[in-house]
Image (cartoon, rainbow, N blue to C red):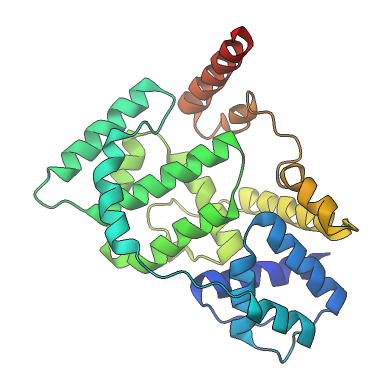
Length: 275
């Protein structure tokens, strides 16, 4: 039901970013289903925080007390972690394609040894690539999208978006970054101004994303038992997940890497058969 989806996305923004939102009244049964959706997607802490933040005026007492008792607030130790992360990213293989890996390593090396090094920009690039890799391997992970969105809203004023745009062009990840930005718009109500490295929202993709999420929420809502929901978690989020062929779904967004990853997956599968 769309009302569950609408309240779910509002609570994501409220819990992840502290945004104010107006929820729509629902029955206790539908609120229980919304909490099941949050559990399946692994974002119960965001939803619980959003519920506790908004208050009990519109939320049934049992649901409000349950959410309030489960609120999880992580301590913000991101600064030190981000600096260490930025200085290590250049040593990691981020792509299956050797050409892209070589370009990535060079741009990180050059940036770290630049007189005006932008650590925050390197961290943002790393988070974008992490989301790309997750998308190619498994599909969308809301928590990882939230991590990217949180970083953008927390450190956006310290990021050199001119560098980010240049790096995106060098790594040939423009289309898939724009696609990821569509998810930030749908899930967390990002504005175009908050995504200066994107060419702008593509409403064709935004409508497709909304339809897919509404469909998945409706499937979860119809599960009669919580244990059935838990056991079918991956099939709900990604109805047909085939690790070998999954990258090809995004071939039009990132053809070089999607092709390389598809071949790498096939080789890995053949290697496992030999063993």
